[in-house]
Image (tube, rainbow, N blue to C red; front, side, top):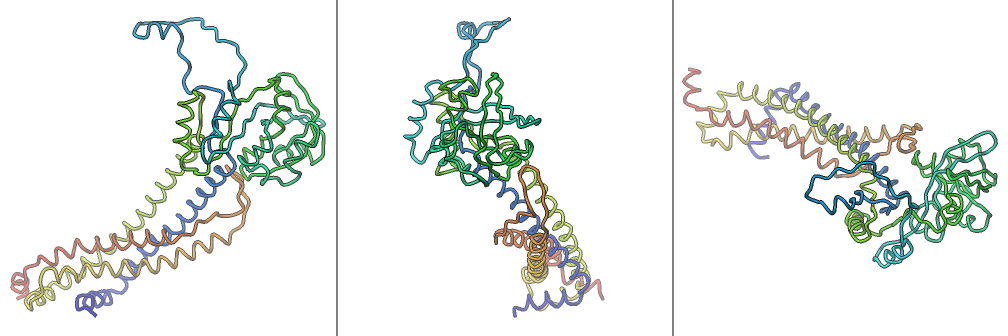
Length: 414
């Protein structure tokens, strides 16, 4: 065993109670970091995975990101122009030349395309009226873009083709209306068009907003119901490379003019909350480790004060400043390493404990317990932070110990 390490261990053994408190402080910081990180990142990764899985990666909408400029503003771009009593053009909403755009998008590598028509509808079953969003799809395209077929709990996607006026409901919509598979309901659009529709499927994604409001029917049936023949107001895209969604959406919007919204942009508010969550997590655990580092600083400072004469004797025997400094730095390093090992056990236990809890909760998504993300990265990060913090806390008094003048100490003792 190196002599410096032997001295460090002997100092820590002498002050066992203070050493134990310092080790526990570092261990709790490491353990809580692992537990909290597993819980928060587990929920975040599950939510993002569900959003990426359920929603299209890019949605092209029948709208423009910025309003088109008025002719007067273009004619007098540098002048002081005020427009009053503007009368907007009453035109049919929808993507113009949608089929040509769809054909162009299908030429992009790694892109699958599904044109749809979305709108609002009132579903009536007996004495119950339920407001919902209805999406007209082409099943052959939708099965490669969305997860509707995988999320079906009853019925089939292709039944939209085989049954007359068929509709697929989210489980939440069906529960609110009291509808079961095979029931016939009335669908009334804001245009006043009403259709008798047969429920041929039920789906559940686990995302509450989707299950409680979304319904699907054939594209042609949706166009009839909304009184918008041959109109498409959304083009949904699924990509092989999810990370390229933002860049590709920007390219599509620049080329065709219509607003192209990536999944990151659509979920920006929630993803922003995740950043705040991570900040709170790191701040809380960082505060625990800082408190633990004060304990380590106090222990090492006390040892330096008590071992002043020993330091003088060691220097007179030929120990250099670096040797003295290494002794006390090693004390902090040893506390950090032991605290890390104990903290890993605490973190593992916390994760096992949280994984044993089972409960039902509905928020953004439906969960039945803590969603935990287990990764060695959390252990390595927490261990590195705890060891570095403990070592730095010991370095401050160690530097002062190394600078002590042995002559002055021995004279003062005499």
